[in-house]
Image (cartoon, rainbow, N blue to C red; front, side):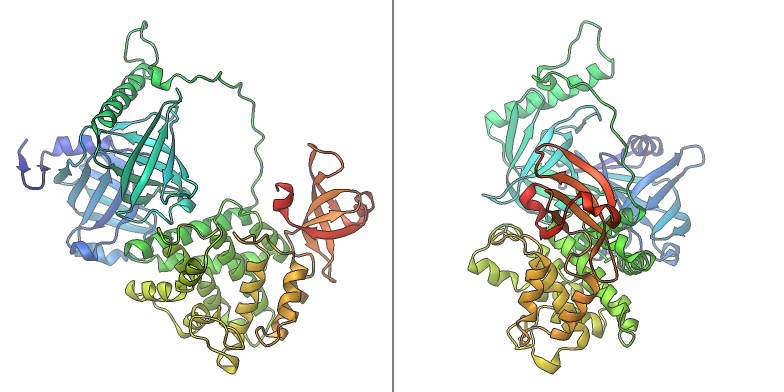
Length: 571
């Protein structure tokens, strides 16, 4: 093996084929953040694409890579460009000059049959070898992005003397921009021991085929007590892995660090609940939106084809069953409020546009714009604006108004092909007829019918969601607010919205006179609930239901009294 050490960069260059193949075989896309980029482009031009290793054949000298979010990659580019495969762990592993032998597209994914790389560069920037935890070793992590804000909860994937890799939901990644310095990251081990340290974000990478991501952290300067504790944690973790794998003598025991003080809970079989196909599709659309945001934040190539597909899928779902679609939208409770808001505005805008023959042709482009119209808010999260859901002061509310300009600027930098209608909606959805809106104070006839419609939908959805400084309003109060302000909101579109969604919108929670609470599943032609899912009876605390009731059986529930907010009842 011929090896070259680059002293200045503390990097190691390996060109031994067997060693490179062994390193590839031991990569794990569960714990390693694997990405590919075009090898012979400048660093500034190189977008990174999430990838997983599907197969390695040392005999034929080939490997099979699947690029999962490759909508912006065209297969002819591999005729002139080679690939670089990167893996983030205790080192940065970079397999260079990989020749693509055959590329096949499957939707937004690319399957690449490649020759094995001839060159491996390792940048050993951490202080010791990475220790990858087994799947049955659970260590929780709390990531504090900003002081006085609730931490983001994650799980430990690996640890070394210089950093760690954490797994967390993709929906939690918006604040974790590159090079962010975290005031505290706390690891809590089964024994109850805590390890708290400052860290900086090295990368945020989506995990292929999931709604999860991994974030690589580099620990800050360690004082001697932290060094001793970390050395103990790394050593104990390595010993625990060996013990669980049966690689030590029978007389060995689990390490105290991973010995839980709690008694193990008896496992009970979980009832597998069927998830509607429409809800799964909506979750996939939400994932694509998170990927779009990550690309915007990190200056990567935008997955435009995924946005196109999301708009098509949303419109298709609406066409399959309007009532099921709007109910499924209310079930996206794991998503942040700004994401739920964007999806709901896009769905309701599509619904209203398709009901207007003279505007129906604009539906696809309008939905595309609505899906991303609030991404600028997530891009503004920083120490001055640490949360979009907590109560804001005047300075923070003023700063938040910059979200339109921030989004448009980011789209322009990324080369997004923004057409006139999309720019009109993104730039005008927060404007008002009397000129009191933002960002430009446009008024009256300068606002197109589609923008007037979008503004009504946007405000109604925002008012019926809880905010840091107020609870959510019911639909009737939101309707009344807009209808009584015709100088600010187009009364025609307020009326049309009410006609389409009624006073008890799909997915809303209603209360009956016998104390029952139920979700609205379907409406009749007059906009009245015709089918509900009963979940609680306030007269019998601690008893929960999951029963669908049609109108013919409403008598047993009593008279429909009012629409109520789920948060009030812990739902």
